[in-house]
Length: 428
Image (tube, rainbow, N blue to C red; front, side, top):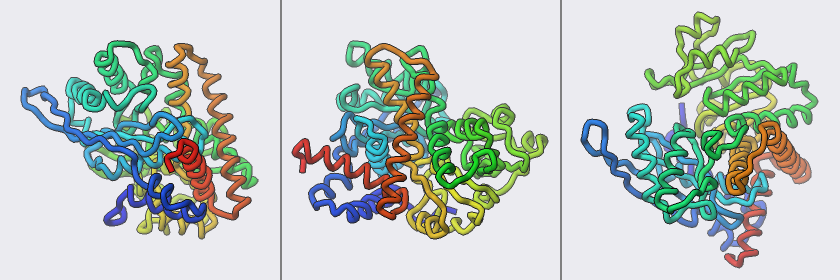
């Protein structure tokens, strides 16, 4: 059960305030960095298939662009709020900075449920979103990407609308596009693979052989699936995964002691990530409560679903066997729960470090699109491995040097880089 009155933006600001204090940031810099620099709130009217009209609420929020154009995804979600988008835009700033990308942080969203929209209605919504913000986005201003319940097709519709409005070809405007239409090879794998590249390094530090480890995962979307894929390729075993059931509007955990078979589960999973429970039982899986992914006797926890999934109400479910929690989702661990995990001696690798592989590869796609020259998949993944490994060790070394949790060390690096860019530009 989630904490009452959870607010992602308040959580993001609390995290910032804590590290700003550690860094002794001056008051003008704190004021500049703890809120978004600009926000766009708008309405998108869409003619529905039955001839009626429906008006959707949309957002695009720029947290900071001192280091480069804003970068961040667009979510389609029925519970989307401005505060969630504000938080995600701030986390994107830190994510780009900790990965040392020449980009700032932004985020967008639409309050909608794509499950209830036809493809034509979704296309109209995508084009309407672009029409509302076209003057404020672009390859040199703000580069969007897919996020929760958006995909490559949505990005291509948005790109097409942007190009129609601006009278040219701008493939570097948006990332997450289909391969062959300006998309990058390796983009689908990037977030999940990048997470496992860092997990590999963390396990080495703990003196743990990845082939002797077990993991439990929350989520079965793109990030979770590719994290499971690479982790098992390295020889690890995933014994449980939890995912949301759209029809039941609740979560279930799918567990099998001999390990889950990702390809097997993919065959019984719908396009929104819901696993068929009856078919899973027939394959030998136990179907458990949604929070039971936390109760597993494993070495590694990988929350890769939504924010606030490990909180003060359920953190005590985590077993003593857990040594590492690595965040595939954005903001999956509340500050109170984070302190509990640290007190238990669990290494928590924070979201904006662990899941930065997605934005790293988005940056690679942006670069390739702008120069109209594309790399092989092996080249993309090798570059990704190199950057993720370097960013992990930079943060981990500072954590040991300063005697602070990895999350604080990652924030210290990211906030220092952004604050320095603001000072060099003369903003503060």
